[in-house]
Every structure is written in C-alpha cells, then in structure tokens.
Length: 145
Picture 1 (cartoon, rainbow, N blue to C red):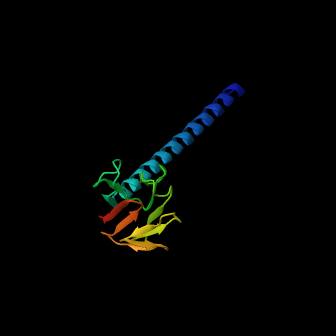
Picture 2: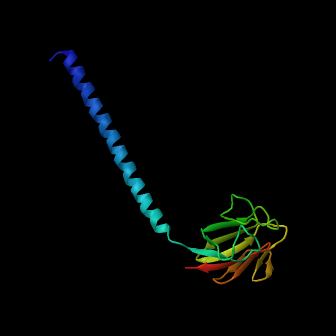
Picture 3: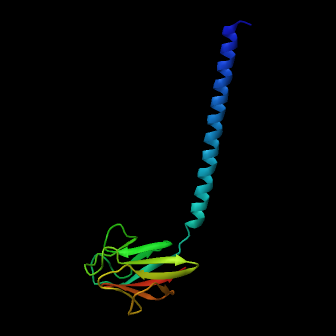
C-alpha cells in the first residue's frame, strides 16, 4: 500500500466519523425538540380566563374573554397579556399570578389603584374563582377551570 492510499483511507474514515457525529447531533436535537413539544402540549391546558363583565368601551365588549397565563399582566400597554384600552388604566396596572395553586393579584403602583371585589388593594391579595377585578372602568371576573 502506498502513502496516497493510506491518506485516502484516513480521509474517508475522518469524513465518516464527522458525518456520524453530525447525524448523532441531529438525532439528539430532534429528540429534544419532540420532548419539549410534548411538555408544551401538557402545559397547554387552560388555567382559566378573565371575563369582561363591564367596560363601557366599544373595543372591549361585555363577555370578551382573556386566557390566563401563570403570570398575567394587565394594563393599557400593548405588551401586557391583557390589554385594556381604558385611559384610566395605567400602562402596566396590575399583575395576576399563580403561586402554589393560588391566584394572587398585585397592584403595580397604578395611579387609580386596583380593586378586588370593590375593595382597593395595596398588597398582593389572593383571588378566588368568581372574584371581580376592577381596573379603571373595566370589571373582570376570574373563572378557573
């Protein structure tokens, strides 16, 4: 065997190892993406919703629903989970979050305050299904599934 044939054999072996490594990497990434998709599908179950009881705004009709996320932000800014087109609501008005199976409502130092069952809250307060959250002129009812 001459040195040219040995070099060719080594190059082919190196190419095979490289393609094998890349194939293994693609397979592992595919498995990880599938597992993440299955976890996301399991988490995709609905946590509940906020139901508009009254708003007095044409952009926010009574009966409109907003799905809840584990951390749901409420306010006038379009970056919020629940955007409320009410000029009496702050840009980032309140935060509704799930902690240890319990929903909590927190006012984010808004100018007009956040109400829970017509009581202005100052600290994080537990929210039960059926409670009414008031932000500006908007009243939202918490419904949990």
